[in-house]
Length: 486
Ligand SMILES: NC(=O)C1=CN([C@@H]2O[C@H](COP(=O)(O)OP(=O)(O)OC[C@H]3O[C@@H](n4cnc5c(N)ncnc54)[C@H](O)[C@@H]3O)[C@@H](O)[C@H]2O)[C@@H](O)CC1
Ligand SMILES: [K+]
Image (cartoon, helix red, strand yellow):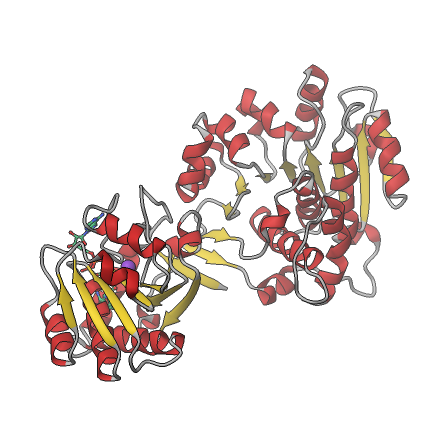
């Protein structure tokens, strides 16, 4: 499990650790780690040009001490002192090592640097970057040199990943003590480049994480493996209500996700045209053509998937009510979410419910514009859990999975090639399968997102390591291979 924390949590842990070590020791550890990483990025330290963007706080102090180390190894280090004040110890160390200081704006220094070290703000940053920081962040983005962010790219909110205005775009972020939420969640994540963690001894002082991310090993541990005495019922029977006479593809893809994720049995229920397509594509599934708003004739299932392509008319609504009235876990996706947005009282039920919206669907459920959700994903996935009382998986550039009282899980797998029609339907089938197998909604949703992303990565990667387009069905078809190699 990878873990991440808010700025507040990091500060509290740092205070506790600081009380046990000599003054300045933590900054020494941080700056040493930073200097080692920076040196490793340069073809040679001696003679290389390094620009330090130095803010008024300790983030600037880290940059100055690291710059002093590089200067002692022969780098030509120039520090742009952008803050109203400057870390005194760091400044003295840099000067003593032969580094030069420059008054802002200093853009020409940024322009000619091989390496730009962003020490404007770290976990103490709040709100939009002010001048001259903002201009320096933009100059760094235009400049040809490599950009290394100290602790957090300046302008990225460390606790949430939100970016108000401009933020530094780094190729590498060197973070201290523990990972911050903002390095894992977009838009912040997309500003970080690669993230390297420098250990400063914070581990024993860290609380329960605010955010966590499953690894392959975690997911392998969560996945059920059939035993000798398992039959299809024990492995999990999933019911899928999806598709319509007009839309049949979503049904085929959702069933495909379930079949290929290892469901013991898939029972599909829907309109005639959708059932026919499902039978043609997946003879493994048992199909029932529904002629009314009841799922009683479908047979026992251990979990339902409700929604992909089912439509939003009165018949679909009645069917959604029938599925949600059952006493087994239900995963609601796509059209099912649109129906729920019209009448949230359908969520009052005894068994667990998992919702899998993208920002647009969540926007209808919460009545918040979807661009605000995209900009503040962590805040809104939590709000959704609060207001709706379910497990919520918010899809998007970073998929988040939230449940009351647990760390928000950030999905760490996937590829931009996954942003294509029908992949969400496949995800619903995978997550529903894991729900039917007995995983909690939180675990089922997070493990499904992980597998879905891995399958997409594998499907889009060629033998020579290049990447290319995928179709949703490729994701489903690649699942067994991905599960085998976990
Ligand atoms: N506390 C510790 O024990 C350690 C802290 N370390 C470093 O210290 C950093 C935190 O230092 P600080 O608490 O001094 O805070 P920061 O250096 O992150 O930033 C605070 C300063 O930035 C200014 N500022 C905040 N938002 C701004 C904005 N939007 N535009 C312009 N200026 C803005 C504030 O007025 C304040 O002067 C960490 O990120 C890390 O780099 C490391 O040295 C490791 C040890
Ligand atoms: K920074």
